[in-house]
Image (cartoon, rainbow, N blue to C red):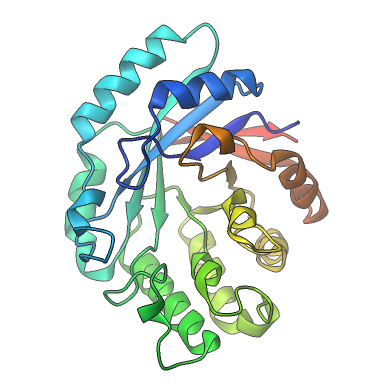
Length: 272
């Protein structure tokens, strides 16, 4: 495995995980990682859902940071532990997210879209009464609006997250089909000096490809993009660094020779 940094991880400090941070760190060490960046969920104004109140995605950042600092010291001779957050972006949250992002000395901030116009594509109601294509386009348009309004993040996470949950998932999905809006997203990210991630979690959801799909990765590289982090999006220890060998192959095929790790919001490039 040539990728030794997992930069998208969720422990029990995220509302959708029950795994302790220490358990995940031990698994990372066992898998040969030299760096792990925890990116716990912080999603303001997440709607209530059949699974519970939206408040479960309000991160207790002080408690999270205290535990991370304790474990960072405990395992400092074995692995580098970094302090990150996955910040849920919505256009009306620009000020609230900006204040939060400046309130802590994060190493790394992932900007992500879990909510599109008040709904999470995770739930079938997002797709009711329309085609996958209509739903996917609405989601991509919301990402573009988020990037226009908010800049305090390092990479945009799982750009095509919506595809996980469509009726046909990625069967009829490709970069070319959505090239107009995807190019606008990538060009704006590059204009703002932001990167993307390759998120291996999509494979675990029955997809044939990672997030984003290979077509997007290739296009990002063609446009001059170089900032790309690698994350398993693991919510349990078993999936830490999952499919990283395949991720290496995909990145090389798309033209990348380096991946990126952020510490103190500064990019470090690591040869594949």
